Length: 176
Image (cartoon, rainbow, N blue to C red; front, top):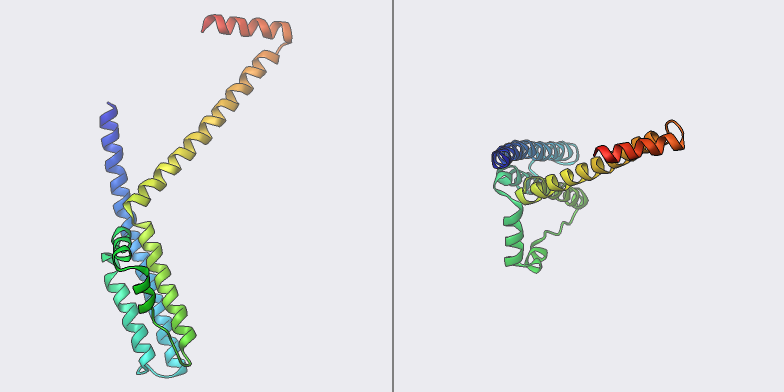
């Protein structure tokens, strides 16, 4: 019976994880679409859509939107380990000109959206978070059950005087 329950629970968790992954992907892409729209509005107000900075930012955001589904936490960790942090730091763009601060902020927001998606959709991190959540719920319920039982026993003992309460405890212990 426990095996059947374990299998059904595991299947339920995998279903929830799959649904969560799709929701997280949509949320990440919505964030990237909003950033792309904000960049478009910014460049319409300050210069034009033909500006090279806008083209760079639009292409970067479009690439993030297109390839977000292909990213996962383990792959990114393996790539960073193989390539090395020095290579990544060397390839990090440096912005110059009047749009430098805007470009840097948008790059950071895009990377933050992707990072949140990577953590939320990692099966390992998702499983660990469920395990920790269930452990916390169980320990909180266990301690409240112990406190409740202690209070009931104390009320039972003190309920109708000390002598009568001790007799009740003895009768309770003898019946158990």
